[in-house]
Image (cartoon, rainbow, N blue to C red; front, side, top):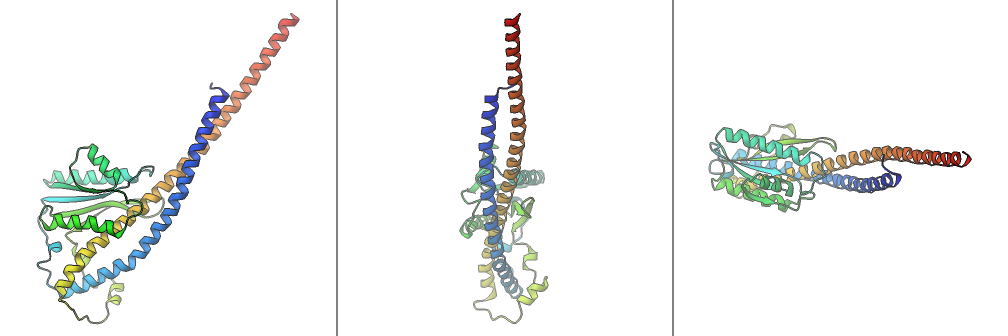
Length: 295
């Protein structure tokens, strides 16, 4: 059995660890709330952008729009959104696992895969597996800006317009709750046809009452709106991923704090047993000494 001093040192070490995990839990909870507010603030802008794009598409000739051109997918670009840090449970592992499964499926169909990755964890994992990465972005996983989404969107659009890829897929964690983050795989390019479908939802019909007079022509307006739509979708995914990361980290740190508390209780019990054993041993030594003197 370990001595009291050894157990005390271990208890103090676990207590220090619990302080760190508790602090990380509180920080993540605060960041999660801010991330949720940013998602809510984006929704009206994203919905209105889609409304305008649908309206322009309904009056424009769609031929000749590079981001709408559909080709036989011989080369696919996969955009993976991960975090820059760990200590977030299965947040990074599950999105990378899904991306690798998608890659195996595509390669099995004879499709060439190009990698675009956001986040240090994704970049390091792909680098460790010796994958060639077309481009990576780091440093903004916990608080992405619209400028970060623009950078990724422009690279994806450039690859697509130049014919280097025939399809672009984005894989990320969609925020459901602090306890649940669902891995989502979505087509980004070419822009899905349902994104241009006019009047599918009642709320969109109400938003588009009245006639529009277009200046310049609707084709030119649509050409400007399509990249904005791609940027907005990427920004939404980055915000969802950021919220998911904070939710996963908050849950992981809460579980770690609970495990630390259980371990402290167990070690305290062991320390009490060790102290009792030492007291018993001292009593036995005193009794044995007394017996020796009287004998």
